[in-house]
Image (cartoon, rainbow, N blue to C red; front, side, top):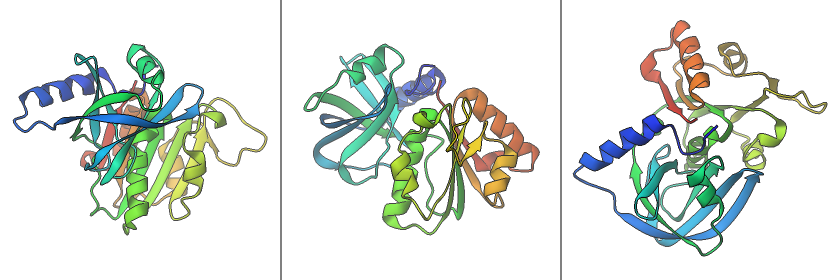
Amino acid sequence: MRAHYYSYERFYKAFWSERFCKMQPKSEIFSVKEVIYRTINVKSLILENNRKTEFTPGQYCFVMMDKKLKRPLSYCGVSGENKIELTFKKTGYFTGRLFELKKNDKLEIQGPYGGPLTFDESYKNIILIAGGVGIAPLMSILRTVKKKNIKIKVSLFYSNKTKEDILYKDELDSYNKFNIIYTITKETPNDWKGELGRVTLEMIKKHSDIKDAVFYICGPREMNENLVNQLMSDGIERKNIRTENWV
């Protein structure tokens, strides 16, 4: 897989949107404040500068290298701070370059840009579904709801190949007010108390109330399309299903 910048479809849509938009976000230089290893091939970069960065949970920015090389990555943190967090998987040249960054290195960031996962605080019930590093933009939603104490029902279904692949697990386990369901697809540990297999409509209904829910789904294209088909076959309107592919 070539995660975590999102699919080429997203990249080119963002590129043309950026090119023809009259009001472009300014690019700014950030310093690497901290590098966090999430797993052996997934890192988070904590970047900071001298002003607060404003964005809506679910939005993304362009990470720029060598002026001509840039890719979109989702914000993982909370808006209004002088730092941002970006989480990505090392799978190709660009993410390999990011993996080499160290504390105090500089990185140019341009954003924010909108996207299908942009969060709306007026919703009363949201169901978040993530596959692997697709948890990145959903962390921004979870963290914002918690920090601002937004009155909303939140369920998260998080699918990974193995228990060791689960990102942010300690933090997610601390979210007592949220309904967090883990599922793994490639092993069955003796101490495992979560679900097994891919996220399905049956699994969602087992653990959450889908009535009046808005779905935010971020994972591989096949997973997203399969879930959209299941949800729509059960009467969920497409406008209430927001998806973002990563490959």
